[in-house]
Amino acid sequence: MARDMTDKEILKMELDQLKKEVSTPRTPVGANCQETISFVEGLAADDPLIKGVPDDKNPYKGDKGGCIIT
Amino acid sequence: MCDQTFMAITFGPCDNCSTTSPLMNIYIKNEPTNYCSFCVEMMACQGLLKGETLASLKNESESLKKKLEEERAKLHDVELHQVAEKIEVVSALSIKTRRVLKGHGNKVLCMDWCKDKRRLVSSSQDGKVIVWDGFTLNKEHAVPMPCTWVMACAYAPSGCAIACGGLDNKCSVYPLSLDKNENLAAKKKSVAMHTNYLSGCTFTNSDMQILTSSGDGTCALWDVESGQLLQSFHGHTADVLSLDLAPSETGNTFVSGGCDKKANVWDMRSGQNVQSFETHESDINCVKYYPSGDAFASASDDATCRLYDLRADREVAVYQKDSIIFGVSSLDFSLSGRLLFGGYNDYTINIWDVLKGNRVSMLFGHENRVSTVKVSPDGTSVCSASWDNTLRIWA
Image (cartoon, rainbow over all chains, first blue to last red; front, side):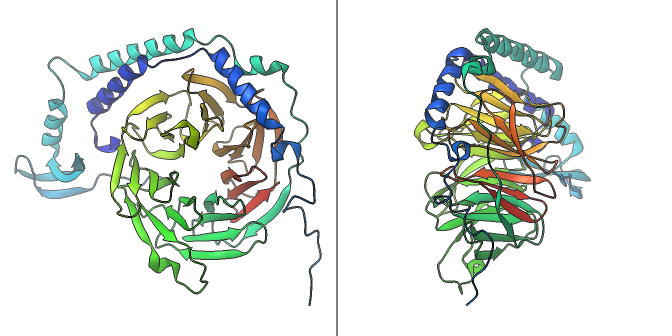
């Protein structure tokens, strides 16, 4: 746990982690952004929060006022 | 988060040198021991190789960080919002409050949806965990917890159990039964044991394993049936406030964010910290994977939400505005990943366009800070939990 580690131990841990991270494989931002955008565009047409749901299919839009007393 | 940790000072013989003096309760490799302050200092110096000092380690750390920044900057050829300029703007959203769930006696701290898209579980400072039916507002179960501040709750993928925990340092699993008269509290199963408060919990793809994050700076993977610790994840240097599992198709990783301003991506099998991101200026309150699994976003007390791409290994977007000065406590993505819902401490929910980086809309209604925001599994509605004792469903 970090609370019980001395400053030196914490720094050592961070150092080991950084050494590993410097060598991770990376791809350019432009290519990834393009992929992300095409992913979203593909799904956005079906996103209920963006395109809305017709009132008869939306379970939350019913019950407009009034209560049934029997 | 209120932090009530402190070093308990006892007096007695030291475990190492046997002199009687004020002792510090410390944990050496998870074993509680008592050392006098002199022995603690001596022990701190032992872990170093010859010639290493605090300063030299710091210098090496700084130079590695610089190198990492350079490597990452090489691939930063374009910004996300520049690539997204050609896309159509999101049309005006018609999202309103459709349901207000009242029933908690104090601040609602966390909520989670069930996979059946209508039930949800919420936990509160009053120590109660309530399972609601979102369509009818029916309270199906109410479980009293022995502690207040139940900070985390989660629904099992099967819908047959819930997990919750908080200041009791444990994560407990309650099987839900259809019998209304059954005492749920009696069937409680304590699964996780941490040495500080539980800040987040989530079931993995099955009911059998739980991933937890804690104020003690670690995350852990537990087997529900036996309560055994399967894997623990060390690397954060302060409280871990949130975690999120990668969406199932993309493998066994999860991301965690904490008070050390870092968001770490972990491999669940090896326990290794695979990637780490430190661009926030304050505590990270919430982390959430993007629906595609190749990115994640984090919400922080510095009033920004940031999107990080895992393949490019860098931050690609910052969602902020000069007029927003309150911290973000929670965030979630819409089904397609086009919208980002952020719950803020100024009682509002801001909706951001993920690709273009601008704010699309704001949701008003809560009368105190929003603690959790979650989109339903089918993407038709958003539920928000707030310190005003209510939850709201927006659709």
